[in-house]
Structure formats: C-alpha cells, structure tokens
Length: 182
Image (tube, rainbow, N blue to C red; front, side, top):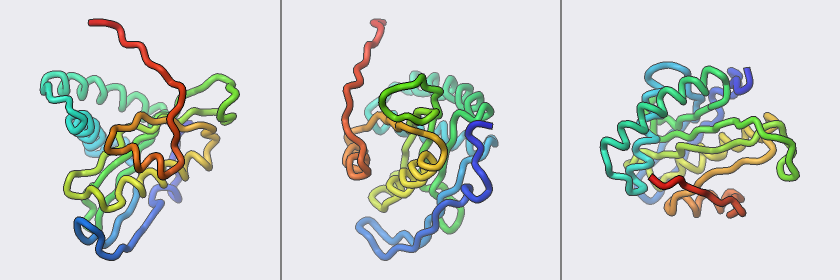
C-alpha cells in the first residue's frame, strides 16, 4: 500500500526532557496511528478541537464536519493516502497528533517527488501545549516524508501554529483560494 508505515517507523521518537515552561514532560513517544475505532475517533476529535480553537463555534457545523471527515478519513487511511502520528506520554495517553494526506500530484517544477504531502490536523491537547509536542510530531511527519518520495509538503497554518512551522523551514507561498458563495 502507498502509505504503509513499517514496524520500524511505528515508534519513531523517544525523548526525555528537563523542566520546561508549563511543566515537566518526562517521556514522549511518537507512534503511528492505527486504522481502528479508537485512533480514528481521536483524529476526528483533534480535527474538531482544532477548528474550535480557531474560532469556529457552531456546534452543529462542527458535528456535521466531523461525521463527514470520519468517513473520508477511514477511506483515505484504508487506501494508504492518509497517515497519522500521535505523541503519547509514559502512560500511553495521547498528548497530540498530526496527519499527512498523500496527494497524487502531476509532474511539477516544484518538488519533484511522486507525492505532495499535505500536513493536516496538527493538534496538541490544551494541557500539553508549549512543551514541544507539536514540534516533535512535525519532525516525525517530515522525517517520514524525506524517506518516501514526498517532494513537496504544504500545510495551512493557524496564527498560533505559524511560528512553529516557520522555525521548521515552511514559507508562505503564492497559493490562492476561491470560495463559492452560500
């Protein structure tokens, strides 16, 4: 399958840290998400939380988006076109997650790889923020991309996430958007 994660890639990172602002993070492990109900539910909850944190407060709209996303997510994960990683603490509790949508991309002048990676759903649980969780997740995703013919990686940054992504080398591009009127 396209986006298979090998057993070696399932546990990508272990880290022991000293005290940081916001508390002590003893051990963090990055693991690949599985195609099971629990991991799918966590990814859906992270996406919902991400949009809520960005100011989308219409509960009905968030619920509708979540249900549509759940169906899309299962389909994409089954096809190997969506991969996800979780940061978990020493007790196995999920601290945050990040997703990678592998998009089949036509030959292009930018990023000569076979795939274009679209990083989505980067989310850290509130009590775990400012402890390096999102940075380690991003490093895991980017490391996977580097070894798997992903020639260009894009993402949409929230105001809160932009400094992190810029520190990892992401730059603003010429992308534009058109939204059909309701």
